[in-house]
Image 1 (cartoon, rainbow, N blue to C red):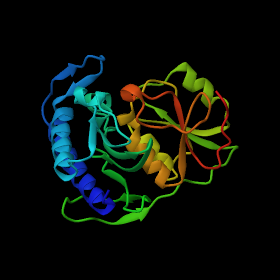
Image 2: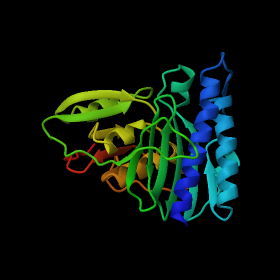
Image 3: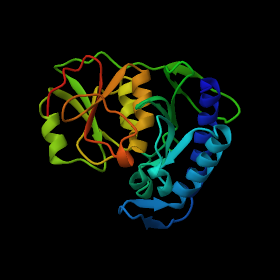
Image 4: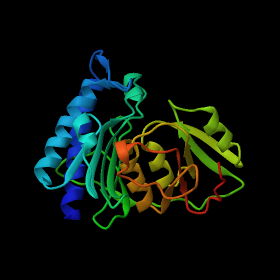
Length: 265
């Protein structure tokens, strides 16, 4: 893989998809349809998916592409693949809460090694560079011009004063019970892959998720967090969270900054 090309292509497509999403977000009421798994989908999901999938297939024709909005791709397998959620956090989009992201990741041998997360309504853009280190670019964003960027790193956590981020739309008793095992000074809610990015930038220390997610929901954020010094493990046994699983469904997981004394579930 040409990682310099990959970074450029992912950034361009994420910004183009974000622009398409925001046109619909800022427009009049939009139709919300329901997919076979009962999750919502809008014209914004479909428009963003068309932009990203066409761009990735043109740039990397030999690489398997898995995308949430194309069910036929969910049967594909490979040790190397691109995986896309064109709009992660559709519920946040529908309720116009802003916490939705464009997610694109590149996975090799079960590990997401490159990724981009773009939150167009929040104007935050995170991605890995060609070496796999994570950056945040500050806007306004231009497709043909890269703005100011800075490397991001997880914070050194204080075990007596952890900052926890949890799902805005999918909190449950299991998650709350797990959070209660820690000394928490700040508990914030966020939608979509932004939770991984908040740990990557040092704005939070811990993100437990005891609920259903798919690999396209997490791969890009996982890559950003890894490139900033963080880790993602399975909830049940604290083993590394891997990708390319049957059906692309994740187990429960915990994302965290190095230095957190992880508690078993």
